[in-house]
Length: 498
Ligand SMILES: [Zn+2]
Image 1: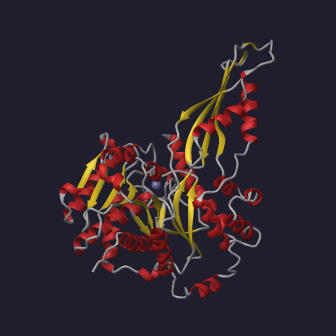
Image 2: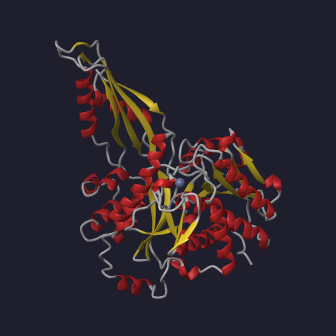
Image 3: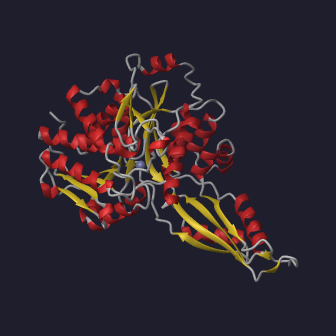
């Protein structure tokens, strides 16, 4: 549905808002040369250059990414199933038993792919590896190149979905193929879950969690669809790991009235009642409150800030209940304010039925992004209190609860190790997205979920995901595959690929 699509756009915008707000002012390291020297990066001219892939690996990764980008898998079209089948064929050809490569979903349009990579010790709890097959539609007329042709130009790979989230799909597929061929066995089972409608309803991942019992036994999930590496002038300055998402809910505010002839206005009026209610909603701020993930976010990101914001972030990171410090920080930046509190904002409005009649009805949609532990009922009750007696508040989209994932030591250590080895010791920054991914539903199913996409991009350049001429850096893509491979192998607790 459209709101969810907007939600994804919001997530991407938020990601880059935070990148700009957090990292643009990294004046502690005044000059790129100083940063490079401080981090021992003199040899690092491209992200992940230390993990340069052998040529055959690069060629295969490129071929896999090119194949899946060239299939138009816009949400809700038959292309999603076609893509799922194409990937399934590739995996079976690589030696995966047919029974372990499952094409499944509630409807043909929602055909997803679940691949089981069998480990040595099936009794240990599996890991989920997540990506989504669907993309936001794109029009040829809006693009410089054909959005559904895979194009390499000037150090970039172009194509719809190349960032969101086909680079992630390709990383999962390329590593599975390579490991299978090399005869590598993880200690435990790995389940790749490639869902079919992340960009719209999330019905695919919900159905898979309900229908494939093994998925819910996972110890935790790694999601390629969130997290990343922020670069400043090609040098890594932060590795983000998404461990939480705000919870999405819509409420309808409606005022009704007997109406009448507009030549005889009366004291009560549906439009004025609604407008007054919305003014109160607009002025209200839900209390600021941090959880483990947002506390860690402020604590870790403080080091990258200048002397005006850095100390404030450090203060809330050290003392997350200090409401005065929280409000001072919130006043500096809308994104930080949104990270620390439930927000509700009017997004749609309608009312009246004729130019010459008193309105009988006025309604607004209010979109809330709730802190994961805020009960939806209490948010609705707060809106009703603000709206007053003459405006009724009802739920228009029920929230799916999604608790923050604990910052597990094994996951954090593995990501920090990669940041040290491949990204020059850049700080690892946990984050709570203000938007939503499939991780919302895996967390709801009790599976701690970590967004570790590892795709590097310049923090000063806006993301083109969902927009025109979507692209990723060629080197960034191959580095991300390598990083993903290392991360999964370490967390699958087994011997490295020979
Ligand atoms: Zn995505």
